[in-house]
Length: 70
Image (cartoon, rainbow, N blue to C red; front, side, top):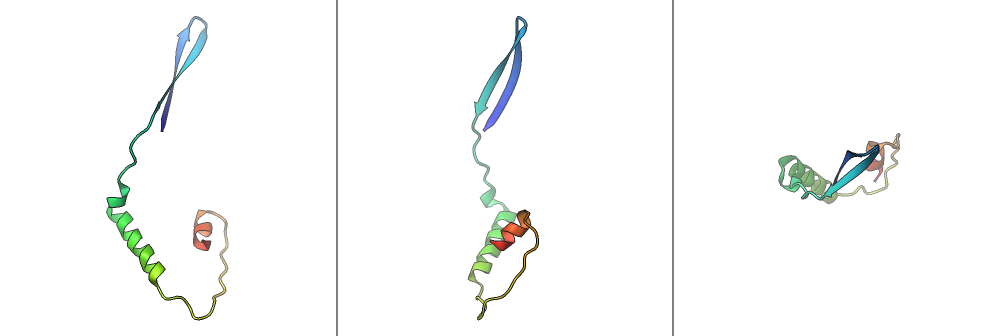
């Protein structure tokens, strides 16, 4: 959604004008990088699981650390 604000002078008071519009979702699912990452994600999902649980330490709580932990 795009919100545009403009100011109009009416006497000594400024009046805000707000315009809201919805834009269509971009078609990023058909792009090559998206399809490559979708294939890589599916490959990881289909990979065999280890016989015994692994102990892993993830340091950091930023976007990369949280997505890795997930």
